[in-house]
Amino acid sequence: MRVNRRCAMRKETQEKDGCTYYLRFFRDWLDFVSCAEHVLRGCKGKSFGGMECSSLYEGKRDWYGTETLAEAVEFAYRGWPEGRKKIREARERMQIEKLLPRAQRIIRSVDTSGDEPDIDLFLQGEPEHMVTLHETIKPHRGKVLRFVLSRDGNASVEGLQMIRRGTAVLTALETLLMLGFTVEILIVLGYERRSAEGAHYVPILHAGDPINLDTLAFMFLQPAVLRRLSFAACECESREYREIFDIYANGGYSRACLPTFLPEHDFCLDWKDGLLNHDDEVVPFAFEILRRVGIKIPETV
Image 1 (cartoon, rainbow, N blue to C red):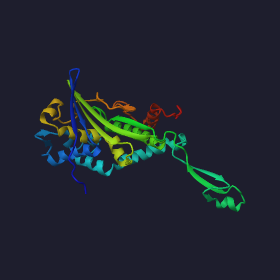
Image 2: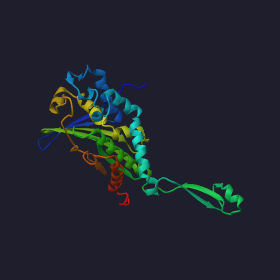
Image 3: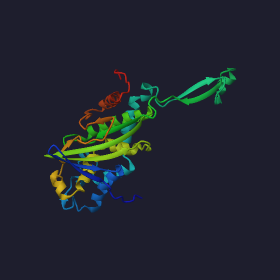
Image 4: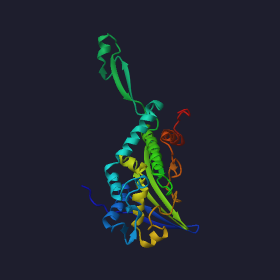
């Protein structure tokens, strides 16, 4: 049973070069999802706070990612089966264990002493019949990689493009974890209109947090993260705020942008980078991300 959680989003407003910046900082992805639940509980038909909400419109699964806002919330909590499947398929196609042999793998060594006997070698009279199993050294153990991922997109961006991009990014990040990196992940969503810019900052993974691939698959791949959940977070704002960014009409809200204010990071992927048109582009882009981070990948891969 889920307990209703009150959103504790922190708000900041800054002025710079004639532009007003409205910054929204969430504690974690659960805080982000709670905004959508707030809209679901308080809506009347397709409206919330007396204004229409794009997040509440039903249908257009190819664009929104889900049939309804409620379905998006359910996927966020329980996992998205299609996302898990796509990650598994991409992982198999990459065959990363063969390409990066120093990743997390078990090595078997045989000597005159060891942890346990190899019965076949013992019966053959081999003096070196004792086996030791050990893990190879992870070359980047302990190194922290702070990763900023823009999950935005203009209305013309297809849902499948977002899914392919997210599959490539998450597969690359899984590889970095195998190599011993400690990864911190921040998702950002930015939108601009005239002389105003808004931004959502959603921490997905802190250093030392347990890895939940169901959560990561949803947050990285699903178009509904933008077109249901982020829209709903905007729709929780005041009427004045919603009017500034045109957040009361069906369809996309304002223009997508990479937020001007970003925290210190090691790697940032803009929303326009990696909008893939074909499934066979997923694995090459995953390798490209690894190269940008500094992992040596053969160019022939």
